[in-house]
Image 1: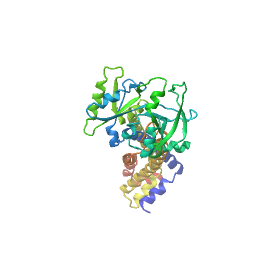
Image 2: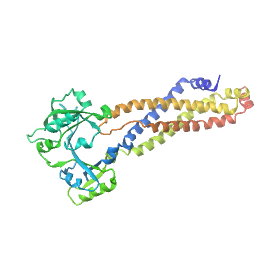
Image 3: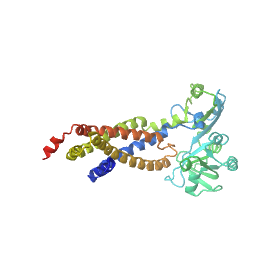
Image 4: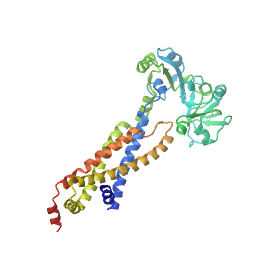
Length: 386
């Protein structure tokens, strides 16, 4: 019988203890992986387009609107290639349980700037000619069985139209696909010009503007120029990159970086306490057997390696199942929060962190049993048993 067979047999001697220990390790790595997946959405590298896109909003709050003529003023700033804008409409279909992410956008520039939305040229031109047209994500179209040409009434809990109604009539004019699949196809867009003329109040304003800088421009410098331009106006601005904006929006609720650090510390010490306790107990129960193996010629190093592999086996098994369950859960979370926080996923570097954590924890959990085995005296142990 080789060392791996011994590890396998000894691990399952106390099936209940082994199972409970593995479950504890699994839960620890599940929480660690879930938070790492959310953190990935906040810190992941953005595409080349996103690196060139900024977001200019009101300095005080995103809920405050900005004058629409800021578009022309920002467009002439050195380093700015183009400027688009959008307003949050929100909305729901039929009843408030069917909440939708609906945006009113500049139909002349928005989809030229946000080219991650794939729309056929024919449908895009048709949408631009349709005053009440909607551009609908494929996932939303599939969910509600919408097709191009369908008339769709959308309700808003924020915006009332000039007729005094919160129900807005639309026509599906285009359906887009996204590189992210269903998770990126849950938004709806319509023309800001229609929105501006039809709403009962706050005309000639937008929720935010999206300047796109040239590749040679300094992003920070352009951002400062934009904010400096409006610093003394009633609509003072704050300009950041898209990624910073998303990260700050989430951190209004929780500082994810701090949470991740605390969870890593908690996970590490939990693993040490649980697995170390298990290994100390197992080693104490097998002291007589270990002394007998020494008497038969097995070295202390062999016995220590056996303990280390048992620790590693428990930790690795728990980590494997914890990461697997977290991966399945994150797929669901990425779809649920596709509009609020896109990019929820486990990065490949996370698995390296898990492996290092398992190896380190296995080493530390084996220290006490290793010291006991190294000092083990055959005559005293077997003699005491006798």
